[in-house]
Length: 117
Length: 113
Image (tube, rainbow over all chains, first blue to last red; front, top):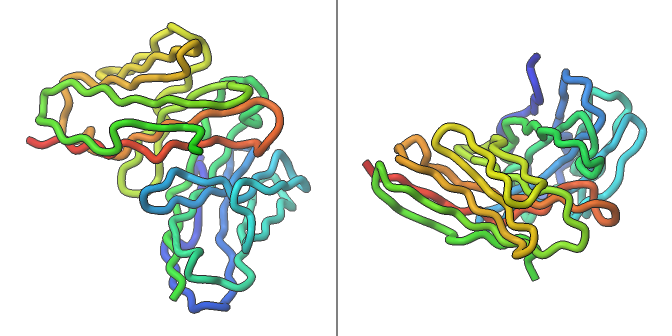
């Protein structure tokens, strides 16, 4: 298994540009999520999905859109990038939703470092 | 107010020392507490704790949860330079709110040779 893969690894955007961060997992996990990590702060949840066709907002959803058309893929879209979105983005997946009560490991992707100028 | 507070924020010790990292939390419907080790970029899972008083152990790392006092500690014995990393604590809540984790800000651990 490749686990959780993210592309690109690095990206530089200009303010106002749009782009999509890709995330895929080959473990047949139902639950997927996107986090951003900023210096001095913990990982913050952006959006999550408990299965194909189902998405919901996390702690910091503004400026980001997601979709989940397949179990494997969970892309994160920035429609109009802003400097405040400069961050490292992590995608994660697990077999069951974290609130299911089933002890489960959340697998993280390698991250995407995004810089918005 | 932060729901998950880790201390210390940074710690520098010498190889061979034993370190204790702390994580306190304040959530409404606690489900579990997780520890991660983050090197370079992607955090890797260490432990998940759900029951009070039961120690989880993996090699030189161990962790225990106190649900009454709302905290957890992560111990690392005989530290090595490879233990240098940011250690993240995260708390999972049941029901309402986001279906995710609330992370602390991490403890930056530096092991000097």
